[in-house]
Length: 248
Image (tube, rainbow, N blue to C red; front, side):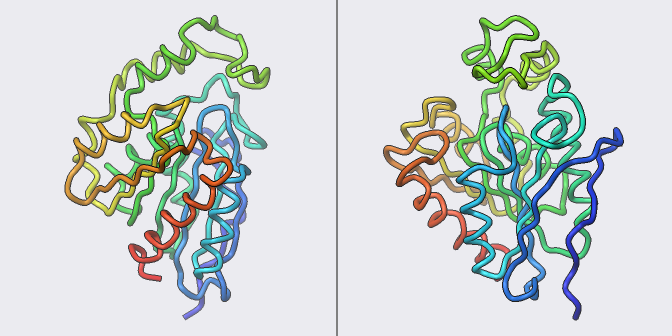
């Protein structure tokens, strides 16, 4: 059977082109397994943790697609329009473009929240991984960006202006814990207990609200971005789990 091909282009329902980086699984994508990887708020598709995951997945025969949500990186759209709700929609459009694969999703930080919401309503995600995921969305935006005025840079990044649309969207969700039980696929949460951006209690609360299909791996001394030794710990926790769940 001929393996499925990588998408040539991904556009969201607003017509915006979404940038992505596709990494083939050895040998020649014969396993027909694909993991879509989503970044966090103010981030992009090429980060040390996501690149390391792509490489390790490829070695296990699993392809990966690192997605840049609209308004981020080289994707079309305005960052000021970026919200969880829009990124959940972007992820659905990316899945539409990936035909013929058995698919997993890995999301970091706000991208983890995006994946949880998508997986709760979309049967095309067969395994879910949430990395340092935001659970309490109102608490997160108020703590991290409560002092910012519209248009001021988020985390010192001029290309990421703070928008009231983001605050309103995160306030509307308030917390994602009540929706956790709607995720019925195998679900792995990985969170460093030295996370300075999203406290590990977010994942503790999320796994407590989820069903028996969910599990939490706490990484001692690891920060939000899995720097240093946290990178290998992340890969060791996630890649064998995905290979087992997807059937590699």
